[in-house]
Image (cartoon, rainbow, N blue to C red):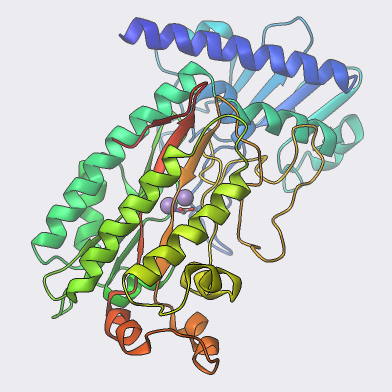
Length: 432
Ligand code: GLY
Ligand code: MN
Ligand code: MN
């Protein structure tokens, strides 16, 4: 099993290498240096912010916590990894694992922060302007050439078998966290304790999470990126929304579940069941050639059907979509590309790199692509009771059942999110 995985990783590196060679030829480059990034200190402090290596670096190395290091790519040459590994008794220097992939690189352990060796027409990827060598680097190389980065981003859309295996494992570990979070909720825990249960069961510390976990009880479930954790449990337990992930070798899971608490109005549990059904229906529509925007529109139609079926809207489903009611109940997009970044690159461009922005009527949509096998996307329909978004509708003559909306508002909202691989025939749900 492990042997297969390591073989897949070597094939992944070979595939990344081929893609880089092609892009460098297309852009007439003789050398390309990819920076790992590094954590900056807080202002006037000697403690650093949390950090993840740059995506282009992780794409090759699969380690998300490497700093001050460089990867140098040249045509027809082995990739050169300059790994910053100083003698340091304050910290544990970065070490490479004893795994077969390391043999694919010429590894140079560097006791100092280095300037990467570049020759001929050169380019650099990474935010290097804060480095003391920035001026020198800018003289030697083009910094972050847009066309090259768009071409490399496009490569990240198509996941290799190794990347899919990593995303599947990230999901498996995150699911264990979600089960623990649900158990903590059943035990009447506070948001902070639910978070700690999640972290423990998914085997990670908070600085490693791919995005700040969203763990909201009651009305906090309606704050889309809720970022604080109450340390005491509320007296009434209406709902819990957990949107929480996990990295595995750099690759991210991004899963959401919503639960009804013992004090929830009965309609809330029914709405959760309906939203699970909508999520599954949308996943069933996934196939090569399908436009993600059309799936997003189907989410709004499905949401309208749910609003009507559950007596939140007493008009036709079509009018709920046309009048913008569904957008007030769900202001975010159906999903996004998923990979080394939670909101992965290239979601808003065409395969040739031309921009493909979200339509102005759906500005939060992060993916406007036509699906093809190898893409990994999230499907995350939502239904929220967000006072700020519903308030403007109250003055309009819309057939919204306001007493029911007000009853359900204490629950905040619902989001259900799975991670899906597009296959030749349809979809493979990585969130099991
Ligand atoms: N966790 C952020 C998102 O679902 O996009
Ligand atoms: Mn999420
Ligand atoms: Mn997501």
